[in-house]
Image (cartoon, rainbow, N blue to C red):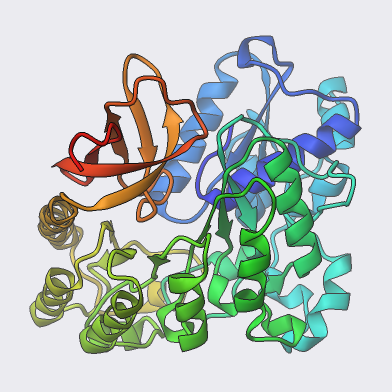
Length: 454
């Protein structure tokens, strides 16, 4: 069972391959000897979801193994509070089959003691490539034979890891402490894995990392991603490529242009704005403002007028004033984003912001979240309505119960809207089809593939 972000999806498929080489196989839960849960440890709600999932799995009477970010972040502390599960950190991934052998045989498995994984690699990015070979970095174990990943579904879309870890020091985020410093994957590994994914039926690749705009800095080439994108888009069988997790402060003009104009690459910008008030952003140890962010979006749309853009924002950060909130509202209103995720601030262990004195009352945070979320719903619905009358290229993903549903280029998987197709009853899963947008429903679109509406 995989919880959390797209990076965890890749990690789970690596774990499945490692288990297979050790004699284990993936089964339906009813037939399983062990339930493995790849947990998320990002924010309070994700932690609660992970813990609830562990407890529910334990209630089935099966043996439970917890891996992933929550397990890595809390280790022995989590094991003590959840004796129902065996807790394994990232360092156990290389010999995960042997650890499950121990669990199945009833042999005790000691949980790890968490440590700041940033300390495991050199501070200077240029010194990391050699050192990273001796550090567990989930999702980086690709081998030319392909045995280091096993697909857990047959979807026509798949995630592909560019890198892991993060060198930024945002005051609200604990991810670098348990995911480690930023480490790029070699371009040859990324290309080889892309080819293998295409051979399994994948038609769209979504490049993921904690910060895709940093790709290549530890390889000595800050333009490595711009160079890699055309090669990935040319992989036989891949019809669309999408880049996720872009940092506005690192979005170089050359990378912006590459994403907006490279054939086969979706003009899709998943931009981590987080807020728009300069004072809040500085307290977050981030950079930017409403005007600078709007300028990025204007440059994107000058190159690709129909480009997709999405972001997440944090509401209720310590010290946030009504004026700060109004500035965020101004930005969102003018930004014309296709999707907006709204999160209420919560303290995270080990972060600078957890020690800030000027915290907002939880009721105030909840009210502000509702206020911004309501505005966001209205804005993305309007943005979807504005796309009526435009042409979109849709990847067909579901053809069940008389409905055909897919995603256009401006719609990322799972987190954005979808497109329901009409007039194409014979369409097959995995096809790319041109369609004409005829209606919208909130963030979702309805598009005609028959040509009658053109």
